[in-house]
Amino acid sequence: MTLLAPPAATTHAAQWTPVCAIDDLESERGRAALVGDTQIALFLLYSGRIHAVSNRDPYSGAHVIARGIVGSRDGAPTVASPMYKQVFDLRTGRCLDALGKEEKSLTTWPVAVRGGEVLVRWGSTL
Image (cartoon, rainbow, N blue to C red; front, top):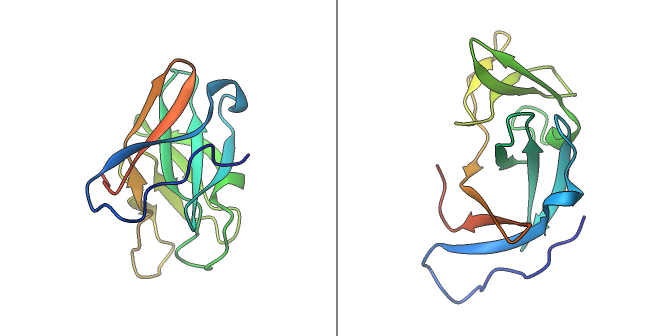
């Protein structure tokens, strides 16, 4: 998946950046995208909601979150890292199971869909 329009590097204001077509996403599976020089992971859930989080696993440093296992915990949509299996809340990026390690989080971004196009609010985090 490739970025359709890179974010403007000269502005500090948050802006909606097109990332991909909604048809590029599969339910309950992650997709990686490059926005500027940042890898993000997009997840389309069965509910139709889309979440955007950092693709970089904060525990291993590997860009693998898009390949994680999608699930839920106490009603919260989650992704388990394929590296060390930490579980993250897709809404907040918070680690729900640090497995005895220091708690770290994924960066999250607001997502919208307009005209079949997935947009991420770049320069703004949740």
